[in-house]
Length: 113
Length: 113
Image (tube, rainbow over all chains, first blue to last red; front, side):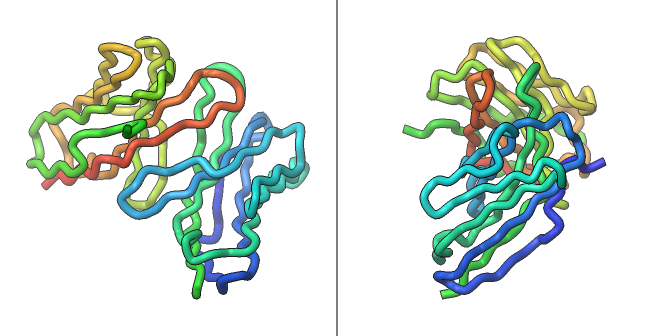
């Protein structure tokens, strides 16, 4: 039972345009969400996060939107750059107890120059 | 100045062997984790230690035994390796508190022949 789903395994975007990566979750107890970026042969690196008390968090070119009623979050990258080409994982957790992360399966983003 | 390091990076071994993967973090975190990323790219938590105490123990075969000699180290020992153990294993660390982010190591690619 995959509680966090990224239904698009891959996405291609032209340089300079917006990249939108989507993530859906099923557990309404999740209250903190994160996006990680992963390059080949490296570990995931933290990108941006959002608490369930917010619906938007912005950090430079990266914005995460949270729609709790739809149990959906998205990561927007504007403008997209070739260096953004990587696999993006969303993760969710319940911020009490052990803070266990549940990861999605990732979306491979390719930004075309 | 590596934050989370793992050794070895690659491990190729025969079925039935016993092997260990080491992890060290120099971030001063109190919690460390082991994740497994299988061929379908699912990144799943296996274990977590907080201050050398086991706090997460997912449904993992008891052939897998984590050991935390101190807060900065979490090693993973695997007995009687099976073909299905082939995966990339990631170590991570964090502070155990709300809105924490986990820092990942570069991964260890284990191939069981």
